Length: 552
View 1 (spheres, helix red, strand yellow):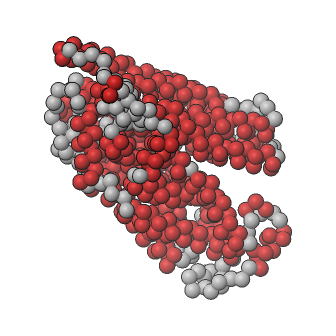
View 2 (cartoon, helix red, strand yellow; view 1 turned 60 degrees about the vertical axis):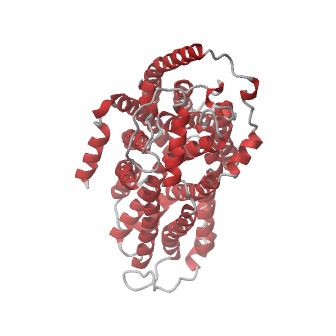
View 3 (cartoon, helix red, strand yellow; view 1 turned 135 degrees about the vertical axis):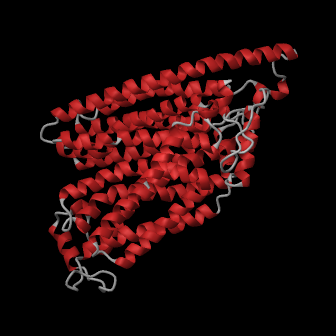
């Protein structure tokens, strides 16, 4: 396994033959942007709630008001920022109509947005760790500001995946570098645990300043280097287009080729007519729910299923592995995607999730080693699937461009619309999880010290010991049984729903090949013919790398 992972790393990182060193350096710079996000976001997820609850002593009403407003803002800012970014690309004018901008100019627009919003994200991250306003007000403002800048960074970074490359091989190489740098950024999880002390945040604040400074400088440096490269290509393309117009004696486009603006309502109707988009959003909604369910209840499962069998240090190792392993595992998944295709690999992951969950249910909760492996692998494989979905969304961007004959791919907007349809999974995960736990065991996670609730959980009837039994044959506590059933039944349900939706998704194989070919032909209108790439699933054949076109 290690040898295969190393060989895949070498093949991805040192593929410098046939003149593709430009792609390598672009992939490195693009992937490094994931490092600068990961450095901050892991620390934010781990400590922002505990900081406001345990250190700033925010009251319960202010906390829930802030969370409610945050959930609304978190759901709406993705399509809002995507619409503001890409609404100019929704016209139905032909590629040569002068609207929407050329690919290098679109990339430059995204890079300028990253160079602005990256440092602002770091600044909003720092505002969390110093008390500068009443806790309720600071909680609301900090969360909305941080999430707004994070959304702006994520949307533009994800959109670049669709703008920089068309073929699966190039997009996988970009995604590979993102996973590599995200794994490096996960080191901030271990550092933050070392410096965290809620009684004295002094050293923790020093660490946060260092992380924010590194992130801000990294965003500025990487985005500026990429801008410098595409500035040259944009000038070259404008000069070439002007020369062609002079040679052909072509002036401004006539009135019948002027683009017609597409309203938000028309765009939504276009998306609703795309069955692949609807089936993908349905599948991804369940995926987002499962990812956040694992994150929210990971500590609860460790506490009630494994606390009597493993040490605290082993639990912390499991937690750390669950953050880093998905990024490393994704590198191996990408090699499988190159061989078998993204669609097939994602389908195998759903089948694997279903099989492991059924096997764990049959084995029972008495096998400590199996429980450790299942809890860790469940999170690793689920998060690993999420890492591959950006490749599918990029394919949906291509399909949207071809079906609606857009002058330029509205990639940020489509990523935002996917987020709008899937963000409710973040809210549903803790709500459904706590409801299931309370309905089955009587255990209320928000009132765990209430003696009435504790008595109800203790007196709840124990089910038959056919599936679970204690070491001496007696039934285990109902709370432990409820946690185990949640652990195995939620993945089984999610896997069945996802397999049903994924089966209806048709953007793979021959259809994807046709979409890739048509998008590439649109990008090459008026450009010299270049040799194509004859490998990969769904459109790698007879297509040309956008980066190779730009390098000319």
